[in-house]
Length: 369
Image 1 (cartoon, helix red, strand yellow):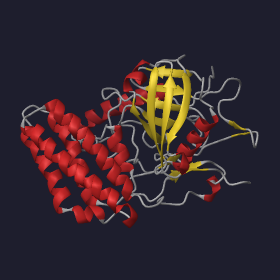
Image 2 (image 1 turned 180 degrees about the horizontal axis):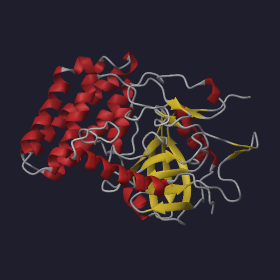
Image 3 (image 1 turned 180 degrees about the vertical axis):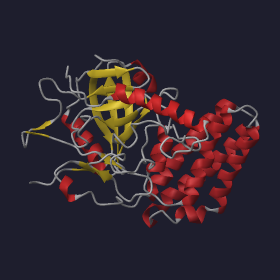
Image 4 (image 1 turned 90 degrees about the vertical axis):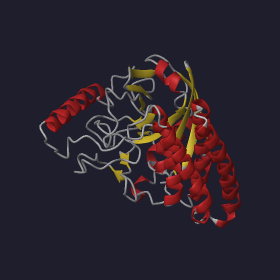
């Protein structure tokens, strides 16, 4: 087992808790220092929602449709909020009926028939959802909401017309994922489904897809496990702590890559803290159980290679929007199925196999030297 300390997570964990305590203390004194103020609103903790919001689209109506349906879960957590649930459902239906031309405006002409069919399904589904909500059927409402958001995801995906930016030429020697991909992982404790987001982290996700294709992770053991915090893997047998490219016989180093909300392209090679962007929020935050991130040497932002970690989000220990991992490590995907498996995996368990089951066509191989 490698002794490489790719991420100082125990240290960061303690600092995160200390930061929270300091923030609460400052608030009790009435001091609103930007660096320590608690984040406004309720951070998104659902991985599917985070992936939807990360899509590079600009259609406010589909975002309103999405948020109306997502808000239902928050309302269901509160007692006697069925009126608010019904209001969300009615708003979703109004958008689908009154704003259909605006929804279709972002769809390429050759995909409009698909989009129209999805909108028809969404209308029918929302009508059924309203019936369930008015009957205060919580389980049926939750199930129908999830099905509808899956259709919204499909509709939003049709709005993505091209990869939104150019990756810097200096990284053309690395694989890049120009879009999304899905990976199925079989572990000694069960199966995981992982969605990789190349729109937000094309170099990091591309490196991962390339290693999955090579079978690099098959048979590797998890080397680090901290309950309710982190699960790490990717250290190959032997003295090396990362991937040695057989074509170059060199360690493949992957730069730190973070896309910030409002930016047109990712920031490379520097943490947000070192860049002086203390309050900026990454498009992919550490606020969801099963966030997938690149591990790296603590003092080298560009020293990552093959080791990665799953973030086991625990609100009491690492409050969403208030931890020291955001902006320091590159998230490039989320576990979308298999939470119960992640909760069981420990150091010594293995990844038996990994396979790209969707989106492999989005992988761009490195240019020849």
